[in-house]
Amino acid sequence: MFLTSCHASCIMMVYEAMRIGRAGRGLTWDLALSGLEVGRNYVLQLMFSNDENITGNNVDITIEGATHRLDDWQPDAINLTAEFTASSSTVLVTFSGPLDGPTGSARRAIVNAYALHLLPEPGAMAIFVLGLAGLAFARRRLVA
Image: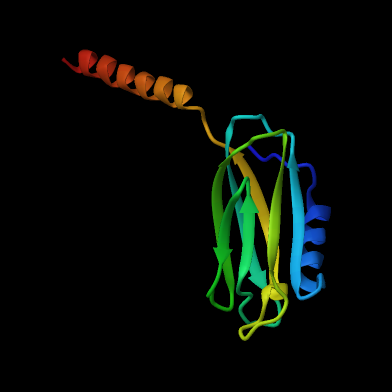
C-alpha cells in the first residue's frame, strides 16, 4: 500500500531542497506524509543517491522523534528503511545536515524515490498463521 499526499512533484521538491538548499550553514527540509491512520505501524523506504559522483554524508532523517543518520555511504546510493507508529494523520519527515564538510556534504544527497507501506496488524497476522495451520491440518487428514 502506497500512501502519500504528493507524488512526482514532491520528489522534485525534495530533490531541489536536498541539492541546492541553503539554510545558513545547515539544511533542514520537511516532507509531510498525510492520510495516515493514528496508531498504525508504517514502513517508510527512502532511496538516496548523490550528485557529482561523490558521497552525500551526514544526512539525518527524523521520523516521529527517531533520527536515522546516513553516513559514510559509497558514491552510488543508499536505501533507508524506517518503521514508525503514526501519532497523527500527518507525519513530518525531516531531512537535515550540514552544507559543508570534508566528504561532500548533505547537499549532495538526493532523494530518488520513496514508498510508504502500512504494516499488517498483529491480529491479522495471527489469523493468517492460524489459517495456514488449518490448511496444513486438513491436507494431512486427506493424505492419511
